Amino acid sequence: MTKKIAIIGTGFGALGAAARLLSTGYDVELFEKRDQAGGRACVFEQNGYRFDGGPTVITAPFMFDDIFEKAGKKREDYFELVPCQPFYRIFNHETRHFDYNSDEAFILSEIDRWNPEDKEGYLRFMKTTKAIFQKGFVELADQPFLRFMDMVRVAPDLISLQSYKNVYSYVSQFVKDEFLRRCFSFHPLLVGGNPFDTTSIYAMIHYLEREWGVHYAMGGTGSIVKGMVRLIEELGGTIHLNTEVKRIRIDGGRRVEGLELQDERFVPADAVISNGDVAWTYRHMIDSEHRKTYTDRKIDRLKYSMSLFVLYFGTDRRYNNRGLKHHNIILSKRYERLLSDIFNKKKLADDFSLYLHMPTYTDPSLAPEGGETFYVLSPVPHLDGNTDWRDMAEPYGDKILKFLEENYLPDLSKHIKARLHIDPLHFQDTLNSYKGSAFSIQPLLTQSAWFRPHNRSEEFPNLYFVGAGTHPGAGLPGVLSSSIIAENLVKQDLPLS
Image (cartoon, helix red, strand yellow):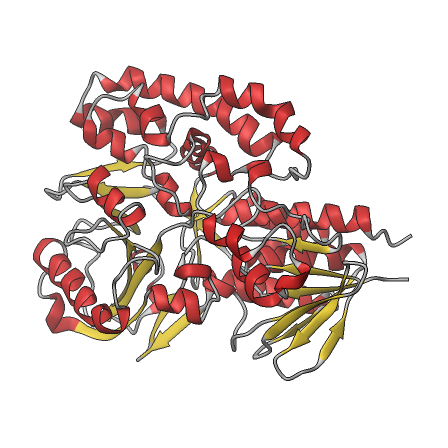
């Protein structure tokens, strides 16, 4: 007899877990608040321009391949991934740039343009990140940390890998040029962390990119969502859109009974997987009388990632001959102090560092003929700060556009034909993210592995979590790894035979 699994949300963690469990023989239903699947990976359209709402950097593509192979399918029949070269073009505050890709000789030639003495240090850095990658990703990313002894067992390895250092400090042991240090330490920002606080384990992201490349899904990240939805439906799964979950119902024996929906319907389930924000799930979907570990006080005391202001705009001219690439990172003259403003002071600064995504560099289909689409992301404080985004969003967007026009996109204001944005209020009110954080719980060493909310709830034996807020953390490889953990735990706890 099959078992019924109800999944809250349709982000990549949920989609991955659903496909895996359906392939194994479980009965799976997903419940999505919004009118489209994908969670943060939603799609916006305006005036013929199409924008990916969320993740745009695709790494470790084999993790998608594995989901389809488990179902007896080929990922290539559902969506196409193409490599991006270079991975990123990184600009300093004077618009001078550094490129990197998977070619070590090319990277060394780029380092040579900045500081030839750092070439040898970079090679040593890469050698050490291989060991970090082997331990942090290959061995531990898809393993649950459910007992304290799980943490104790790996502690010696983590100490030997200098996990007590932050990413910036770790990189600085090997690289002396300040800008190059920034180029090799920015990666925690992609998963909600401050490079000056995030454990050096996250230095492995650079190695992961070198190992498997950075890719783009033709048609945008939304095409991956469509492909996975199609797979889930082919396997017999059901996705309910415009269906918000009101409460996770708990029985007297402290087990999950199922889901109560906003329209008062009840959905019984043998187990529930939440792809919703962990803090939001506990605080808003489970009555406080049932929560012994994740009390409101504990939830409030956790440290949360920064939020994001993301501006999407389309132009009626092409800019791909202006020195920009598919993925561009523009670093402020201030680096540590700007990040301190965002993460520690919760202050919206006058300057900014930006990630500028230009997908039409690779895929012109996202814009009308002769046009370009852009996604520009600025890390900003979450809602513990005092910024009123109802008043600030438009002028902040104007400020970013003015900066881009003056430095990278000439005459931009004359050519904009589509414009929209998301801000911390969107993360809170639409995506149900606690404090409007963009990546849930911040990836500090004291909030990693066993210290992070567990993949199987500490409170209820048949409630599971996938996504950014649980182990191993944010980013596509992280949330897809969490779907593997959820699958394995459900099969262990609720075997079909």
